[in-house]
Image (cartoon, rainbow, N blue to C red; front, side, top):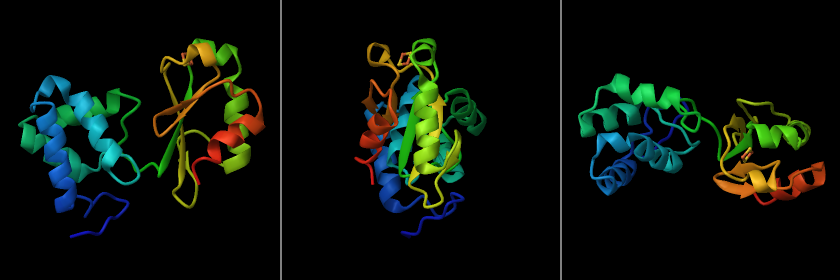
Length: 167
Ligand code: FES
């Protein structure tokens, strides 16, 4: 069972189950640490999201109501229940980055990749979304690509240089 389909069915391969089990064990199956568990799982699922099969598996394995798993997914902007992309681009939407020009970033990405927020490129490579402050205010305006932080992005060239690392 190695197929992956974008709607989430068939995503739960035996290999993925093993990795999810490891993550849950790392957190000692502690339901109060569900956010961290889901974030770590999301990182290893193709297209970086929590498919329904995976949410159900976590619910059953940790003995947590499925509704609670979805409460967490819908509350935290960093979690997604829809397929995103190979590379998730997150623009900080908090006050310091706004003041220092996060719209330059957004416009540059829209021009370079042809996507707006909550959209993926047609090839499934890049996804763009806004996120709250991630602690890089001193190098604002900033963005993250798959968790790596890039700062001082005040020109389209600087944005392109960062994107060129993820082809
Ligand atoms: S305000 Fe943008 S990283 Fe903190």
